[in-house]
Image 1 (cartoon, helix red, strand yellow):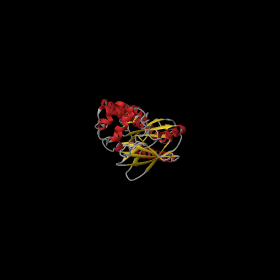
Image 2 (image 1 turned 180 degrees about the vertical axis):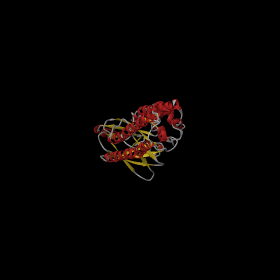
Image 3 (image 1 turned 60 degrees about the vertical axis):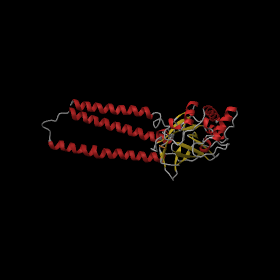
Image 4 (image 1 turned 90 degrees about the vertical axis):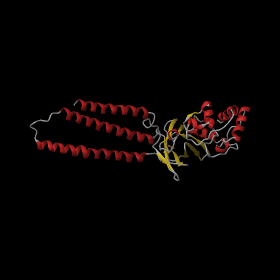
Length: 331
Ligand code: CUA
């Protein structure tokens, strides 16, 4: 009896513990929706949570009653058998059917309620292990930060350059796979301005966990101002150090792998660096974009993100300082 009570107490504390842990990590993601799609997902989540809680509490009540109830000696065996049968049919067949049926209807309604507009269209291409975002009007490419206008249906065309990845912005949408040779689409709609964390949710290699991006939702006028800014070619070096850094960039392996629009650098292997300094993160969320981390990244990106495709760069200390100064000027 004591052991059974302990078991019941352990089940309750596990449930509460799980609920607290889930609410802690989920409040900043799925359960803090900022768009209609995520709203639907959060609604279904809460529905399942409360339904599961009700079923668990019901089960617990029956468990407790069964433990404390004494079997009457003069009980009618036939009556007991009928009661057991009703219990099995009700609790084992009718109740699960009702639960699954309501969940199915809720899901169908949810799928129908998802936004499907394409007022703005953006291309998202996944690479091991970073993201490229392409805009058509005006035509430009950027990396690891996806700007979208608020209150607008943004159709994201999802492709991959190598293996299967999966695109997920928990506060704005559900997940969708990016499959080689295929284009999937997903509609993002942010009701409020903000920075929303996005991540890859399909295991894609060594740095799958460091394959993040940010969706930056801004009011439409700010979005258009951002586009006007981004479509500009890179700023030209304006100091002697920037000029030396520019020369170092163009004569090293950097230019072979990265694009800096308006310069001879036109490598298509790594992210476009035309407005590199405007981004908050390095290596798709691997480290903050500051001078110390950038220095470490340029010299040997394998330290911060082992397994990514950027090779170490052999460069003298003074040349490196100039190179960092140039990169930091690329607003
Ligand atoms: Cu890309 Cu996981």
